[in-house]
Amino acid sequence: MPCCTTTQAAGLTVSPSRSQFFEGDSVSLSCEADNSSAGWTVRRNTTRETRTQCGDTWGKLAGSTCNISFLLQPDSGVYWCEWREGAASSSSIQLTVTGGSVILQSPVLPVMEGDDVTLSCHTKTAPSNLPAAFYKDGSLIRTEPAGHMTLHHVTSSDEGLYRCSISAHGESPSSSISVSGRPTTPPPPPPTSPPPPSSTSPPPSSTSPPDYQSLLHSIQCLTFFSAGVSLLLLVLLVLHFIKKNHEETSTSKVYSAVRTEDLRQGQRTSIRIPEDLH
Image 1 (cartoon, one colour):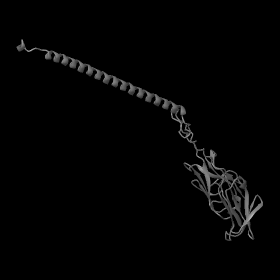
Image 2 (cartoon, one colour; image 1 turned 45 degrees about the horizontal axis):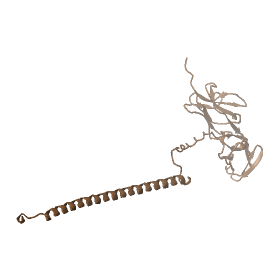
Image 3 (cartoon, rainbow, N blue to C red; image 1 turned 45 degrees about the vertical axis):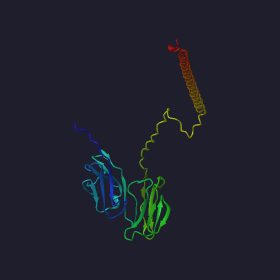
Image 4 (cartoon, rainbow, N blue to C red; image 1 turned 180 degrees about the vertical axis):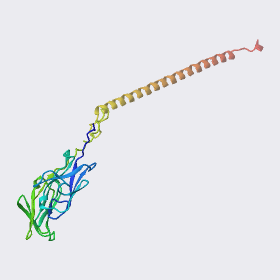
């Protein structure tokens, strides 16, 4: 059993790109798919026929393109692309063929919200820059001297049926303008927040108050250290004086002993009697 295939959506394009035509004009309708146009065909519904395929009783099929060389009013209707007997289909468009002498050139497909749309009023024989009046849903919008009117930044409120008229030539059929919303894009991811400050990091000096307790402790430590050094120096000085005094005392004792001994020796020498006196 063959596996089912996935069909990509196709779009119907019209050349020339407009929805109104004069009798006797030619038009090409093409089915354009993302991967391949093979298997697609153009169908239509008119007042005379339903779901008829290009090449049967109207138009000439060339691949996925349908060419109509001579349009007539009965060719007015709804056209769309279809793949293999209704397995898939495109969005439909409305084409209008008029036997009059004025047409409104307007977008064939829905326009994107926020875009500018230009409408043009044309006659079959006269120049296309004649003054024209433009209407929406039967109400006059305004008259443009050159036959062109631009709708700026269209919204859903601009949807409706539009037509135009040129003095001494007549008016065009009505064509619908649809506005589609722009595709939504996902919002950008939120910015990554910086990590919280570390608990061991000191607070900014510009915002922290002076630490008087630490300063007082430092002064106390410095005072105790100075007192300790002074006491140590005093002890060393006392020991130095004690040692010096001891050395001087020892020297005096030695000197006294030597002096006494010398005196004793001198006395013994002085009382000795010479032998010749005996």
